Amino acid sequence: MAQELTARVKEVIQRTYNVKSIRLDIGGKADFKAGQFLAVTLQNNPELKKYLSISSSPTEECYLEFTKKLTESDFSQVLNQLKPGDTVNIQYPFGKFILGEPAADLAFLSGGIGITPIRSIAKYVVDKNLGTDMVLVYANRSLKDIVFKDDFDAMQKIYPKIKVAHVLCEASPGFKCTPGLINAQVIKNEVSDYLKRKFYLCGPPQMVEAMEKLLVQELSVGKTSIVTENFQGY
Image (cartoon, rainbow, N blue to C red; front, top):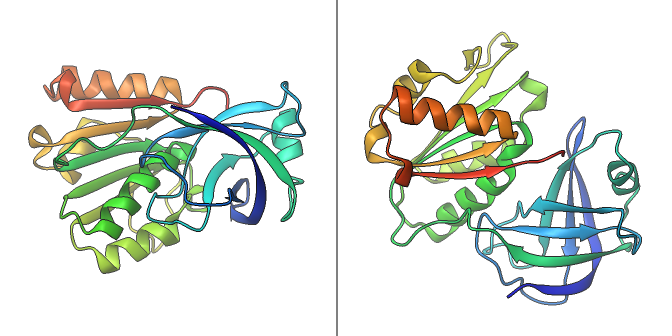
């Protein structure tokens, strides 16, 4: 059951040149499952409302965090001015982009800001030391567009069963990545046991649709092994 409350901004984190995380103090422990989303309303204005994934994990108990790509929208322009001490109205939790129990071995296919719920799920698995094997194939335009790079680098150092494979349209010298876009061969290369995994797809709707089609038609992955989340409008 979703709850509605006014939350105080605790911290604002610049993740990349055009992505910010907002950490909220909700006056207690947030009750949600990794991978779910919330509704955020700014300035008590119904026209400044968006549904955004929760990027923190339930194991990070001191705050509730959401992360947004900044655009030219009115919502983004107001969000970009938020500072510690400001308040926002939120409703949460929503969504079924969550871990099943017991957690099967996972493969995440993501693009851009679609990484937010995946970060929540991966952090939860790592913090709980669930033993779940995870492979993330993460597509971006360039190195500077990678959100939560430091977080995933840190997870790989302490949790041996997570692998992150970057796919970049614009490769950077010295940075390990696959140039281009996610395709069937990339998945075969990075997720060799793909038929044994549960796939989580998150990103722009066109990307999610293309990835699901690729998995089902080119790689014969069953639809019951695919969980999707679309990011509308940013």
